[in-house]
Amino acid sequence: MRGFVSAVLAVLAFSPLAAQAGDWREKVDSQLLDKMGTGSAEFIVFLREQADLSGARRFPDKTEKGRFVYERLRQTAENNQGPLLEALKARGVEHRAYWIADMVWVKGDRATLEAMAMREDVARVYANPRVRFAEPRPSAGGSRQPEVIEWNISKVKADQAWALGYRGLGAVVAGGDTGYQWDHPALVGKYRGWSGSAANHNYNWHDAIHSGGGVCGPNSAQPCDDYPIGHGSHTMGTMVGDEGGANQIGMAPDAKWIGCRNMNVGDGTPTTYAECYQFFLAPTDLTGANPNPALAPDVINNSWGCPPSEGCTDPNVLRAIVENTRAAGIVPVASAGNDGPSCGTVRDPAAIYDASFTVGSTDSTDAAAGESSRGPVTVDGSNRLKPDVAAPGVGVRSSVPGGYNYLSGTSMAGPHVAGLVALMISANNNLAGRVGQIERIVRRTAVPLGTAETCGGLAAGVVPNNTFGYGRIDALAATQAAADWIFADGFDPDI
Image (cartoon, rainbow, N blue to C red; front, top):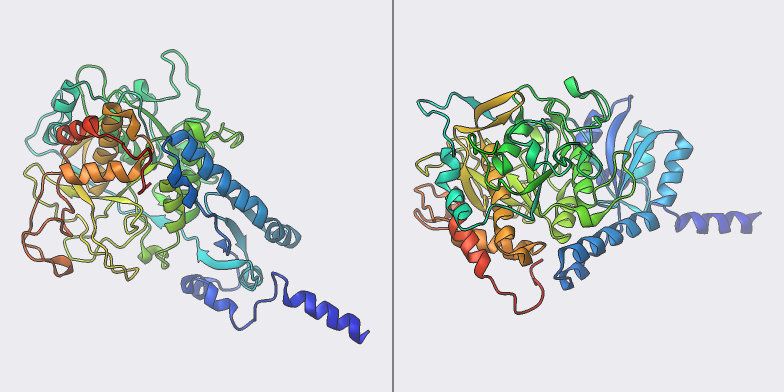
Protein backbone atom coordinates (compact mmCIF):
# COMPACT_ATOMS: atom_id res chain seq x y z
CA MET A 1 0.00 0.00 0.00
CA ARG A 2 2.90 2.34 0.84
CA GLY A 3 4.32 1.77 -2.67
CA PHE A 4 0.91 2.39 -4.25
CA VAL A 5 0.50 5.67 -2.39
CA SER A 6 4.01 6.74 -3.44
CA ALA A 7 3.20 5.95 -7.05
CA VAL A 8 -0.02 7.98 -6.90
CA LEU A 9 1.83 10.93 -5.37
CA ALA A 10 4.43 10.72 -8.13
CA VAL A 11 1.72 10.88 -10.80
CA LEU A 12 0.03 13.82 -9.11
CA ALA A 13 3.33 15.66 -8.93
CA PHE A 14 3.41 15.75 -12.72
CA SER A 15 -0.32 16.26 -13.32
CA PRO A 16 -1.96 19.55 -14.38
CA LEU A 17 -3.31 19.84 -10.83
CA ALA A 18 0.05 19.83 -9.15
CA ALA A 19 0.64 23.59 -8.69
CA GLN A 20 1.30 24.55 -5.11
CA ALA A 21 -1.78 25.89 -3.33
CA GLY A 22 0.10 28.94 -2.16
CA ASP A 23 0.97 29.90 -5.75
CA TRP A 24 -2.41 29.83 -7.46
CA ARG A 25 -3.44 33.37 -6.49
CA GLU A 26 -0.43 34.77 -8.33
CA LYS A 27 -1.97 33.59 -11.58
CA VAL A 28 -5.30 35.34 -11.01
CA ASP A 29 -6.27 38.91 -11.85
CA SER A 30 -6.41 40.73 -8.51
CA GLN A 31 -9.68 42.42 -9.51
CA LEU A 32 -11.25 39.01 -9.97
CA LEU A 33 -10.09 37.79 -6.57
CA ASP A 34 -11.33 40.93 -4.83
CA LYS A 35 -14.82 40.73 -6.34
CA MET A 36 -15.34 36.98 -6.49
CA GLY A 37 -17.23 36.61 -3.20
CA THR A 38 -19.34 33.50 -2.68
CA GLY A 39 -21.23 33.64 -5.97
CA SER A 40 -20.13 32.95 -9.54
CA ALA A 41 -18.25 35.13 -11.97
CA GLU A 42 -17.00 35.06 -15.53
CA PHE A 43 -13.30 34.64 -16.13
CA ILE A 44 -10.88 33.67 -18.90
CA VAL A 45 -8.42 30.81 -18.46
CA PHE A 46 -5.28 31.20 -20.60
CA LEU A 47 -3.32 28.00 -21.07
CA ARG A 48 0.43 27.99 -20.75
CA GLU A 49 1.19 26.78 -24.26
CA GLN A 50 0.31 29.30 -26.97
CA ALA A 51 0.75 28.82 -30.70
CA ASP A 52 4.05 29.70 -32.36
CA LEU A 53 3.05 31.79 -35.38
CA SER A 54 6.51 32.94 -36.44
CA GLY A 55 6.24 30.79 -39.56
CA ALA A 56 3.56 33.13 -40.93
CA ARG A 57 6.33 35.51 -41.98
CA ARG A 58 7.36 33.31 -44.88
CA PHE A 59 3.99 33.56 -46.65
CA PRO A 60 3.65 36.53 -49.02
CA ASP A 61 0.08 35.57 -49.95
CA LYS A 62 -2.60 36.73 -47.49
CA THR A 63 -4.77 33.64 -47.97
CA GLU A 64 -1.85 31.29 -47.33
CA LYS A 65 -0.74 33.33 -44.34
CA GLY A 66 -4.24 33.37 -42.88
CA ARG A 67 -4.71 29.63 -43.34
CA PHE A 68 -1.35 28.88 -41.71
CA VAL A 69 -2.23 31.00 -38.67
CA TYR A 70 -5.74 29.56 -38.42
CA GLU A 71 -4.55 25.97 -38.62
CA ARG A 72 -1.75 26.53 -36.12
CA LEU A 73 -4.10 28.21 -33.63
CA ARG A 74 -6.77 25.53 -33.99
CA GLN A 75 -4.26 22.71 -33.63
CA THR A 76 -2.71 24.24 -30.53
CA ALA A 77 -6.11 24.63 -28.87
CA GLU A 78 -7.18 21.09 -29.79
CA ASN A 79 -3.94 19.62 -28.48
CA ASN A 80 -4.01 21.43 -25.15
CA GLN A 81 -7.54 22.11 -24.04
CA GLY A 82 -8.92 18.58 -23.70
CA PRO A 83 -8.01 17.86 -20.05
CA LEU A 84 -9.12 21.30 -18.88
CA LEU A 85 -12.44 21.02 -20.74
CA GLU A 86 -13.04 17.60 -19.22
CA ALA A 87 -12.41 19.03 -15.76
CA LEU A 88 -14.90 21.82 -16.38
CA LYS A 89 -17.46 19.39 -17.75
CA ALA A 90 -17.08 17.20 -14.66
CA ARG A 91 -17.78 20.24 -12.48
CA GLY A 92 -20.89 21.04 -14.52
CA VAL A 93 -19.92 24.68 -15.00
CA GLU A 94 -20.71 26.80 -18.02
CA HIS A 95 -17.73 27.29 -20.32
CA ARG A 96 -16.79 28.10 -23.93
CA ALA A 97 -13.53 27.26 -25.68
CA TYR A 98 -11.74 29.61 -28.08
CA TRP A 99 -8.84 29.14 -30.47
CA ILE A 100 -7.97 32.76 -31.38
CA ALA A 101 -5.70 32.23 -28.39
CA ASP A 102 -5.40 29.06 -26.30
CA MET A 103 -8.10 30.13 -23.84
CA VAL A 104 -11.42 29.10 -22.30
CA TRP A 105 -14.22 31.30 -20.96
CA VAL A 106 -15.65 30.01 -17.68
CA LYS A 107 -18.55 31.00 -15.47
CA GLY A 108 -17.92 29.44 -12.09
CA ASP A 109 -17.54 29.88 -8.36
CA ARG A 110 -14.41 30.47 -6.30
CA ALA A 111 -13.70 26.76 -5.98
CA THR A 112 -13.70 26.43 -9.78
CA LEU A 113 -11.48 29.48 -10.08
CA GLU A 114 -9.01 27.98 -7.61
CA ALA A 115 -9.05 24.60 -9.35
CA MET A 116 -8.29 26.23 -12.69
CA ALA A 117 -5.51 28.43 -11.33
CA MET A 118 -3.84 25.47 -9.60
CA ARG A 119 -3.39 23.62 -12.87
CA GLU A 120 0.14 23.55 -14.27
CA ASP A 121 -1.19 23.86 -17.81
CA VAL A 122 -2.81 27.21 -16.92
CA ALA A 123 -0.70 30.36 -17.24
CA ARG A 124 -3.14 33.09 -16.21
CA VAL A 125 -6.77 33.68 -15.21
CA TYR A 126 -8.18 37.03 -16.31
CA ALA A 127 -11.33 38.81 -15.23
CA ASN A 128 -14.11 39.08 -17.82
CA PRO A 129 -16.13 42.08 -16.65
CA ARG A 130 -18.67 43.95 -18.71
CA VAL A 131 -17.02 47.05 -20.10
CA ARG A 132 -18.94 50.23 -20.91
CA PHE A 133 -17.12 51.92 -23.75
CA ALA A 134 -16.60 55.69 -23.75
CA GLU A 135 -19.23 56.74 -26.24
CA PRO A 136 -18.58 59.55 -28.72
CA ARG A 137 -20.09 62.99 -28.26
CA PRO A 138 -23.09 63.85 -30.44
CA SER A 139 -22.37 66.97 -32.48
CA ALA A 140 -24.74 69.29 -34.25
CA GLY A 141 -22.12 69.95 -36.91
CA GLY A 142 -22.13 73.68 -36.13
CA SER A 143 -22.98 75.75 -39.19
CA ARG A 144 -21.74 73.01 -41.48
CA GLN A 145 -24.31 71.58 -43.87
CA PRO A 146 -24.34 68.07 -45.31
CA GLU A 147 -22.14 67.86 -48.39
CA VAL A 148 -22.07 65.49 -51.34
CA ILE A 149 -18.56 64.54 -50.22
CA GLU A 150 -18.17 65.11 -46.50
CA TRP A 151 -15.49 67.51 -45.27
CA ASN A 152 -13.50 64.84 -43.47
CA ILE A 153 -13.26 62.70 -46.61
CA SER A 154 -11.97 65.66 -48.60
CA LYS A 155 -9.65 66.70 -45.77
CA VAL A 156 -7.65 63.48 -46.07
CA LYS A 157 -7.84 63.65 -49.91
CA ALA A 158 -9.72 60.39 -50.31
CA ASP A 159 -11.73 61.93 -53.15
CA GLN A 160 -8.47 62.71 -54.96
CA ALA A 161 -7.46 59.07 -54.58
CA TRP A 162 -10.81 58.10 -56.13
CA ALA A 163 -10.00 60.29 -59.13
CA LEU A 164 -6.96 58.06 -59.73
CA GLY A 165 -9.22 55.00 -59.70
CA TYR A 166 -8.45 53.89 -56.14
CA ARG A 167 -11.85 53.40 -54.47
CA GLY A 168 -11.34 50.22 -52.45
CA LEU A 169 -12.35 47.69 -55.10
CA GLY A 170 -11.29 44.18 -54.12
CA ALA A 171 -10.71 45.00 -50.45
CA VAL A 172 -12.82 43.89 -47.48
CA VAL A 173 -13.13 45.93 -44.28
CA ALA A 174 -14.55 44.65 -41.01
CA GLY A 175 -15.88 46.19 -37.83
CA GLY A 176 -16.37 44.86 -34.32
CA ASP A 177 -18.82 47.24 -32.68
CA THR A 178 -22.42 47.73 -31.48
CA GLY A 179 -23.70 46.19 -34.71
CA TYR A 180 -24.81 47.69 -38.02
CA GLN A 181 -27.95 48.59 -39.92
CA TRP A 182 -26.93 46.46 -42.87
CA ASP A 183 -29.71 47.72 -45.16
CA HIS A 184 -29.00 51.41 -44.61
CA PRO A 185 -28.96 53.11 -48.04
CA ALA A 186 -25.30 54.08 -47.60
CA LEU A 187 -24.24 50.58 -46.49
CA VAL A 188 -26.37 47.95 -48.18
CA GLY A 189 -24.61 48.08 -51.54
CA LYS A 190 -21.26 47.64 -49.82
CA TYR A 191 -22.27 44.69 -47.63
CA ARG A 192 -20.55 41.50 -48.77
CA GLY A 193 -23.68 39.57 -47.93
CA TRP A 194 -25.89 41.52 -50.37
CA SER A 195 -26.17 40.28 -53.96
CA GLY A 196 -28.26 43.20 -55.16
CA SER A 197 -31.50 41.29 -54.70
CA ALA A 198 -31.03 39.00 -51.68
CA ALA A 199 -29.00 38.80 -48.48
CA ASN A 200 -26.80 35.95 -47.29
CA HIS A 201 -25.39 36.63 -43.83
CA ASN A 202 -23.28 33.46 -43.65
CA TYR A 203 -19.57 34.36 -43.39
CA ASN A 204 -20.45 38.05 -43.35
CA TRP A 205 -21.95 38.55 -39.89
CA HIS A 206 -21.47 37.17 -36.40
CA ASP A 207 -23.13 38.09 -33.13
CA ALA A 208 -20.96 37.62 -30.03
CA ILE A 209 -23.83 38.75 -27.77
CA HIS A 210 -25.50 35.62 -26.45
CA SER A 211 -27.87 37.18 -23.91
CA GLY A 212 -29.59 40.54 -23.77
CA GLY A 213 -28.92 42.40 -26.98
CA GLY A 214 -31.35 45.30 -26.60
CA VAL A 215 -33.63 45.91 -29.58
CA CYS A 216 -31.69 43.30 -31.59
CA GLY A 217 -32.00 40.51 -29.02
CA PRO A 218 -29.24 37.92 -28.56
CA ASN A 219 -27.63 35.92 -31.37
CA SER A 220 -29.08 38.10 -34.10
CA ALA A 221 -29.17 36.25 -37.42
CA GLN A 222 -28.57 39.46 -39.36
CA PRO A 223 -26.54 42.62 -38.75
CA CYS A 224 -28.36 44.87 -36.29
CA ASP A 225 -27.24 47.93 -34.32
CA ASP A 226 -28.56 47.90 -30.75
CA TYR A 227 -27.00 51.21 -29.66
CA PRO A 228 -29.30 54.26 -29.47
CA ILE A 229 -26.98 56.61 -31.39
CA GLY A 230 -25.98 53.95 -33.90
CA HIS A 231 -22.29 53.84 -33.02
CA GLY A 232 -21.42 50.85 -35.19
CA SER A 233 -23.43 52.04 -38.18
CA HIS A 234 -21.68 55.41 -37.98
CA THR A 235 -18.20 53.88 -38.01
CA MET A 236 -19.02 51.62 -40.97
CA GLY A 237 -20.36 54.59 -42.89
CA THR A 238 -17.01 56.35 -42.54
CA MET A 239 -15.26 53.27 -43.89
CA VAL A 240 -17.38 52.56 -46.98
CA GLY A 241 -20.64 54.57 -46.94
CA ASP A 242 -22.07 55.92 -50.20
CA GLU A 243 -25.63 56.09 -51.48
CA GLY A 244 -24.44 56.33 -55.07
CA GLY A 245 -24.87 60.07 -55.43
CA ALA A 246 -25.38 62.27 -52.41
CA ASN A 247 -24.11 61.33 -48.96
CA GLN A 248 -20.60 60.27 -49.93
CA ILE A 249 -19.55 59.66 -46.35
CA GLY A 250 -17.06 56.81 -46.70
CA MET A 251 -13.37 56.52 -47.44
CA ALA A 252 -13.54 53.43 -49.68
CA PRO A 253 -16.93 53.33 -51.41
CA ASP A 254 -16.10 50.33 -53.62
CA ALA A 255 -14.85 48.12 -50.78
CA LYS A 256 -17.04 45.46 -49.17
CA TRP A 257 -17.74 45.14 -45.45
CA ILE A 258 -18.51 42.42 -42.93
CA GLY A 259 -19.36 42.87 -39.27
CA CYS A 260 -19.54 41.44 -35.77
CA ARG A 261 -21.39 42.75 -32.71
CA ASN A 262 -19.06 42.72 -29.70
CA MET A 263 -21.05 44.99 -27.37
CA ASN A 264 -24.41 44.52 -25.70
CA VAL A 265 -26.02 47.98 -25.87
CA GLY A 266 -22.56 49.46 -25.39
CA ASP A 267 -21.25 46.88 -22.89
CA GLY A 268 -18.54 44.50 -24.05
CA THR A 269 -16.34 41.95 -22.32
CA PRO A 270 -12.87 40.68 -23.19
CA THR A 271 -14.44 37.49 -24.52
CA THR A 272 -16.97 39.27 -26.75
CA TYR A 273 -14.10 41.30 -28.21
CA ALA A 274 -12.02 38.12 -28.63
CA GLU A 275 -14.93 36.26 -30.24
CA CYS A 276 -15.21 38.89 -32.95
CA TYR A 277 -11.48 38.80 -33.65
CA GLN A 278 -11.80 35.02 -33.95
CA PHE A 279 -14.71 35.30 -36.39
CA PHE A 280 -12.80 37.74 -38.57
CA LEU A 281 -9.70 35.55 -38.68
CA ALA A 282 -11.80 32.67 -40.06
CA PRO A 283 -15.43 33.68 -40.82
CA THR A 284 -18.08 31.04 -40.20
CA ASP A 285 -21.65 30.34 -41.22
CA LEU A 286 -24.45 31.58 -38.97
CA THR A 287 -24.23 28.46 -36.80
CA GLY A 288 -20.60 29.22 -36.03
CA ALA A 289 -19.44 26.22 -38.07
CA ASN A 290 -17.27 25.66 -41.15
CA PRO A 291 -14.71 28.44 -40.61
CA ASN A 292 -12.97 29.70 -43.74
CA PRO A 293 -9.85 31.88 -43.33
CA ALA A 294 -9.89 32.66 -47.07
CA LEU A 295 -12.86 34.96 -46.35
CA ALA A 296 -11.02 37.02 -43.72
CA PRO A 297 -11.06 40.82 -44.14
CA ASP A 298 -8.03 42.96 -44.90
CA VAL A 299 -8.53 45.30 -41.95
CA ILE A 300 -10.60 45.45 -38.75
CA ASN A 301 -11.81 48.69 -37.18
CA ASN A 302 -12.03 48.63 -33.37
CA SER A 303 -13.67 51.81 -32.07
CA TRP A 304 -13.85 50.68 -28.45
CA GLY A 305 -11.68 50.36 -25.37
CA CYS A 306 -11.46 48.05 -22.39
CA PRO A 307 -10.65 50.36 -19.44
CA PRO A 308 -9.24 49.37 -16.05
CA SER A 309 -11.87 51.58 -14.43
CA GLU A 310 -14.46 49.01 -15.54
CA GLY A 311 -12.47 45.99 -14.41
CA CYS A 312 -9.94 45.29 -17.18
CA THR A 313 -7.14 45.64 -14.68
CA ASP A 314 -4.65 43.48 -16.57
CA PRO A 315 -3.60 45.37 -19.69
CA ASN A 316 -2.43 42.18 -21.41
CA VAL A 317 -5.78 40.43 -21.49
CA LEU A 318 -6.25 40.92 -25.27
CA ARG A 319 -2.64 41.26 -26.38
CA ALA A 320 -2.25 37.71 -27.75
CA ILE A 321 -5.55 37.99 -29.61
CA VAL A 322 -4.48 41.18 -31.40
CA GLU A 323 -1.01 39.82 -32.14
CA ASN A 324 -2.48 36.63 -33.62
CA THR A 325 -4.86 38.65 -35.79
CA ARG A 326 -1.98 40.71 -37.11
CA ALA A 327 0.06 37.58 -37.79
CA ALA A 328 -2.77 36.38 -40.06
CA GLY A 329 -2.23 39.40 -42.33
CA ILE A 330 -5.12 41.52 -41.03
CA VAL A 331 -4.51 45.16 -40.04
CA PRO A 332 -5.95 45.74 -36.52
CA VAL A 333 -6.93 49.44 -36.31
CA ALA A 334 -7.82 50.78 -32.84
CA SER A 335 -9.15 54.12 -31.64
CA ALA A 336 -6.83 55.82 -29.14
CA GLY A 337 -9.57 56.65 -26.61
CA ASN A 338 -11.30 59.79 -25.39
CA ASP A 339 -9.46 60.46 -22.12
CA GLY A 340 -7.26 63.40 -23.25
CA PRO A 341 -5.76 65.92 -23.20
CA SER A 342 -3.46 64.69 -20.41
CA CYS A 343 -0.37 62.69 -21.29
CA GLY A 344 -0.37 58.93 -20.76
CA THR A 345 -4.09 58.54 -21.46
CA VAL A 346 -3.72 55.93 -24.21
CA ARG A 347 -4.17 53.24 -21.58
CA ASP A 348 -6.83 50.76 -22.66
CA PRO A 349 -6.72 47.61 -24.77
CA ALA A 350 -6.61 47.33 -27.71
CA ALA A 351 -5.12 50.80 -28.40
CA ILE A 352 -2.10 50.25 -26.12
CA TYR A 353 -0.62 47.30 -28.01
CA ASP A 354 2.33 47.49 -30.34
CA ALA A 355 0.38 45.16 -32.66
CA SER A 356 -2.53 47.65 -32.96
CA PHE A 357 -2.44 50.57 -35.38
CA THR A 358 -3.76 53.29 -33.08
CA VAL A 359 -5.53 56.45 -34.23
CA GLY A 360 -5.94 59.85 -32.56
CA SER A 361 -8.51 62.51 -33.44
CA THR A 362 -8.18 65.87 -35.21
CA ASP A 363 -10.60 68.62 -36.23
CA SER A 364 -11.05 70.41 -39.57
CA THR A 365 -7.99 72.62 -38.90
CA ASP A 366 -5.71 69.68 -38.05
CA ALA A 367 -5.74 70.62 -34.37
CA ALA A 368 -5.78 67.74 -31.90
CA ALA A 369 -9.19 67.07 -30.39
CA GLY A 370 -9.12 67.89 -26.70
CA GLU A 371 -10.54 64.53 -25.67
CA SER A 372 -8.23 62.51 -27.93
CA SER A 373 -6.03 60.34 -25.71
CA ARG A 374 -2.32 61.05 -25.68
CA GLY A 375 0.61 58.72 -25.21
CA PRO A 376 2.97 57.38 -24.19
CA VAL A 377 1.63 54.02 -23.03
CA THR A 378 2.63 53.63 -19.40
CA VAL A 379 0.04 51.16 -18.12
CA ASP A 380 2.12 48.18 -19.29
CA GLY A 381 5.50 49.77 -18.56
CA SER A 382 6.41 49.97 -22.27
CA ASN A 383 6.43 53.77 -22.61
CA ARG A 384 5.70 53.18 -26.30
CA LEU A 385 4.67 56.04 -28.56
CA LYS A 386 0.96 56.21 -29.30
CA PRO A 387 -1.11 57.04 -31.28
CA ASP A 388 0.50 55.91 -34.53
CA VAL A 389 -1.35 58.42 -36.70
CA ALA A 390 -4.34 60.78 -36.51
CA ALA A 391 -7.48 61.33 -38.59
CA PRO A 392 -10.60 63.54 -38.48
CA GLY A 393 -12.81 62.81 -35.50
CA VAL A 394 -14.64 66.06 -34.65
CA GLY A 395 -18.08 66.72 -36.13
CA VAL A 396 -18.01 63.73 -38.49
CA ARG A 397 -21.26 63.08 -40.36
CA SER A 398 -22.06 59.46 -41.14
CA SER A 399 -24.81 56.84 -41.24
CA VAL A 400 -26.94 55.94 -38.23
CA PRO A 401 -30.02 53.73 -38.15
CA GLY A 402 -32.71 55.52 -40.12
CA GLY A 403 -30.56 58.42 -41.32
CA TYR A 404 -27.38 60.40 -40.66
CA ASN A 405 -25.84 62.24 -37.72
CA TYR A 406 -22.71 64.04 -36.53
CA LEU A 407 -20.54 62.40 -33.87
CA SER A 408 -17.16 63.23 -32.36
CA GLY A 409 -14.46 61.06 -30.80
CA THR A 410 -11.56 58.82 -31.70
CA SER A 411 -14.24 56.26 -32.60
CA MET A 412 -14.86 58.47 -35.62
CA ALA A 413 -11.15 58.84 -36.44
CA GLY A 414 -10.25 55.14 -36.53
CA PRO A 415 -12.58 54.21 -39.43
CA HIS A 416 -10.79 56.69 -41.70
CA VAL A 417 -7.63 54.60 -41.35
CA ALA A 418 -9.48 51.32 -41.92
CA GLY A 419 -10.96 52.80 -45.10
CA LEU A 420 -7.52 54.05 -46.15
CA VAL A 421 -6.16 50.50 -45.94
CA ALA A 422 -8.86 49.43 -48.40
CA LEU A 423 -7.90 52.25 -50.78
CA MET A 424 -4.26 51.21 -50.64
CA ILE A 425 -5.06 47.57 -51.40
CA SER A 426 -7.16 48.65 -54.37
CA ALA A 427 -4.10 50.60 -55.58
CA ASN A 428 -1.84 47.57 -55.16
CA ASN A 429 -3.44 44.25 -54.28
CA ASN A 430 0.00 42.81 -53.50
CA LEU A 431 -0.22 44.78 -50.24
CA ALA A 432 -3.01 42.52 -48.96
CA GLY A 433 -1.73 40.64 -45.92
CA ARG A 434 1.44 42.73 -45.56
CA VAL A 435 0.52 44.55 -42.38
CA GLY A 436 3.94 46.00 -41.67
CA GLN A 437 4.28 47.41 -45.18
CA ILE A 438 0.82 48.98 -45.07
CA GLU A 439 1.49 50.66 -41.75
CA ARG A 440 4.85 51.99 -42.88
CA ILE A 441 3.31 53.59 -45.95
CA VAL A 442 0.56 55.23 -43.89
CA ARG A 443 3.12 56.63 -41.44
CA ARG A 444 5.54 57.85 -44.10
CA THR A 445 2.87 59.62 -46.15
CA ALA A 446 1.02 61.25 -43.23
CA VAL A 447 0.99 65.04 -42.98
CA PRO A 448 3.51 65.66 -40.16
CA LEU A 449 2.00 67.59 -37.27
CA GLY A 450 4.14 68.98 -34.49
CA THR A 451 2.81 70.06 -31.13
CA ALA A 452 3.78 72.14 -28.14
CA GLU A 453 2.72 69.23 -25.96
CA THR A 454 5.74 67.35 -24.68
CA CYS A 455 4.15 64.06 -23.63
CA GLY A 456 6.73 61.37 -22.95
CA GLY A 457 9.49 63.95 -22.62
CA LEU A 458 9.63 64.61 -26.36
CA ALA A 459 10.70 68.06 -27.46
CA ALA A 460 8.07 70.49 -28.74
CA GLY A 461 7.57 70.24 -32.49
CA VAL A 462 9.16 66.83 -32.94
CA VAL A 463 7.45 64.24 -35.21
CA PRO A 464 6.44 61.56 -34.37
CA ASN A 465 4.93 62.59 -31.08
CA ASN A 466 2.43 61.31 -28.53
CA THR A 467 -0.38 63.59 -29.71
CA PHE A 468 -0.57 62.96 -33.47
CA GLY A 469 1.86 60.07 -33.93
CA TYR A 470 3.37 60.49 -37.39
CA GLY A 471 0.64 62.95 -38.39
CA ARG A 472 -2.77 63.20 -40.03
CA ILE A 473 -3.34 60.61 -42.77
CA ASP A 474 -3.13 61.59 -46.45
CA ALA A 475 -5.05 59.17 -48.67
CA LEU A 476 -3.74 60.58 -51.94
CA ALA A 477 -0.09 60.27 -50.93
CA ALA A 478 -0.66 56.85 -49.35
CA THR A 479 -2.40 55.35 -52.39
CA GLN A 480 0.21 56.77 -54.76
CA ALA A 481 2.97 55.27 -52.62
CA ALA A 482 1.08 51.98 -52.46
CA ALA A 483 0.71 51.86 -56.24
CA ASP A 484 4.46 52.36 -56.63
CA TRP A 485 5.48 49.91 -53.90
CA ILE A 486 7.69 47.11 -55.23
CA PHE A 487 8.24 43.85 -53.34
CA ALA A 488 11.67 42.57 -54.27
CA ASP A 489 12.08 40.22 -51.32
CA GLY A 490 8.98 38.11 -52.00
CA PHE A 491 7.66 38.47 -48.46
CA ASP A 492 7.15 41.02 -45.72
CA PRO A 493 9.72 40.48 -42.94
CA ASP A 494 7.66 42.61 -40.58
CA ILE A 495 4.42 40.67 -41.17
